[in-house]
Length: 360
Image (cartoon, rainbow, N blue to C red):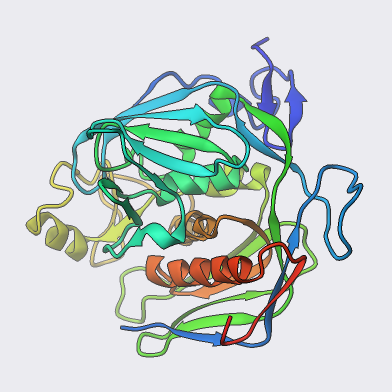
């Protein structure tokens, strides 16, 4: 029997290894890496759900939500970044309620920080970059997805380099580290957005779009359509899933990043990812095959796009309930959606129901 840890639902767990979703993490030891967008709003409205369990003393229109969580103890990982290849040591630290997710560059003078907020997003190809003053952290999306998927609200992420370690290209090593440290409730309610009406963001020239719509679920549902066209070696894939901690860990977290062979050559020619081989990266060849590697699911690419979406939307600063439907959406459109949701919240701060027309 291993020591009890805290499961994502704020449920104490004393199951033996293999008995619950925490079990996968208990073996984890200090991890070493083995165009323009058009916003189309259709009466968009979201509601803020807040309050402690039981909902006593809550304003009309609000709903009680679960309490915020943080790590029970620090967790550490180490490995090269995906793009720059620099070995980075990363520590995930418990943080007080209301802190949110913050990145701290301990290798820089004064250990500057940047909050995991869409207002700090810096444009960057194929990854999510956050900057604030001297603090710059790249490739944050997989870690953010792990934190959001397991409902970790407050955490300080210390790094001694410019990029989150890539690990195996998925969020699973981060989940293992988080659950190995354990989670604990903090007695302060989470703020959860309930999507009440349709909002759509599109990039007409490329046919990419993402929309949020109401649903009857108390969790976020993501429905992603991956389609790179008839000439792509990767066939179209569609997949939808309700994002609960259990399903995130079982069905999403292990999905790895992927590229086409031609993209690898172009990236390495530009100086990125030169340390990687096809054993460390899922690479689709021109004929659609994967060489020197194998897929974890036949639809692993679309699962990874869902993972990216979860990490990017976490930059809104809120957990959401409703349905996100996306077609070919990448980091740029995901960031726009996160920014729109964040703007809706800040525009009507303190009100249980918030309306956002074009002038939100």
